[in-house]
Length: 181
Image: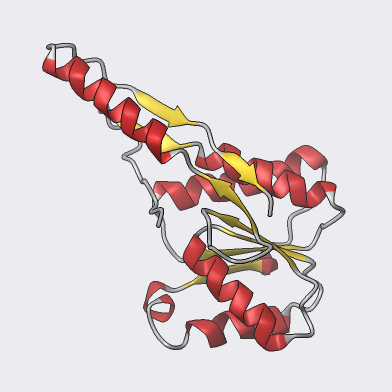
């Protein structure tokens, strides 16, 4: 299971992150290229840098295509609800109240699983194209894959530099790729 890898903005330190911005940009650009314009953004209500960067990538994909973003299609699930039995109802109600959605981009695997369950529950929205950041382990769902091995290699390399008394804070951004079922 992948986790968000937040970092501290404007703090001079070593960071190793996946390309959250670029991954979201690629994912949403892919959905837009399939003629989806009413794309829901499903996300935990969280202000960590991974979620922020993924949201910015989502927005930039729309901007670069010259398409207006309908932020009423953004579902930010409060963390207390996300961690409760109310989560499925919350996402189901959101989808039911936004019947024009043709695709959904989930910023986490957890919210992707919830969205998939809500789509199945509602059945009338079964034509929603779901794409996730991280592998939700759902049949037929495309996702953005982080390269955890490269992140680990980079961490070891930077740690070795520090052990050799080389202190040169870097922000290593590790590429991601879209995986299609």
